[in-house]
Image 1 (cartoon, helix red, strand yellow):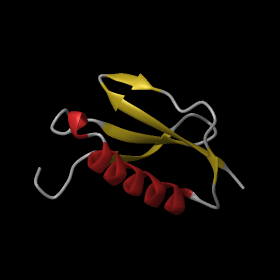
Image 2 (cartoon, helix red, strand yellow):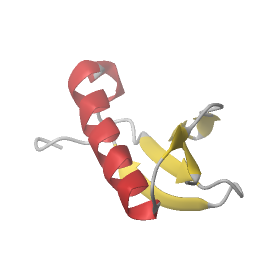
Image 3 (cartoon, one colour):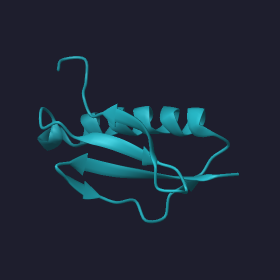
Image 4 (cartoon, one colour):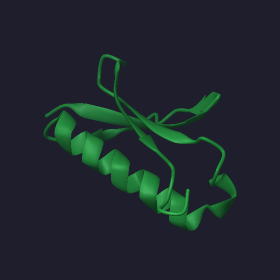
Length: 73
């Protein structure tokens, strides 16, 4: 199974160096969307600052972006 990396991005990138082994890109995108929602809930200082979770595949190519936004943004 492939490994995917979930970087936190806002102008600069906080890279995910370990990643997660997941069955496919679709699941990786779902994980990123959930992670972005969780970050929105537990890190209110990041709200409204255009943070995203960028998902990279094993080759380093971005395959998905999930905005860190909530229902009130």
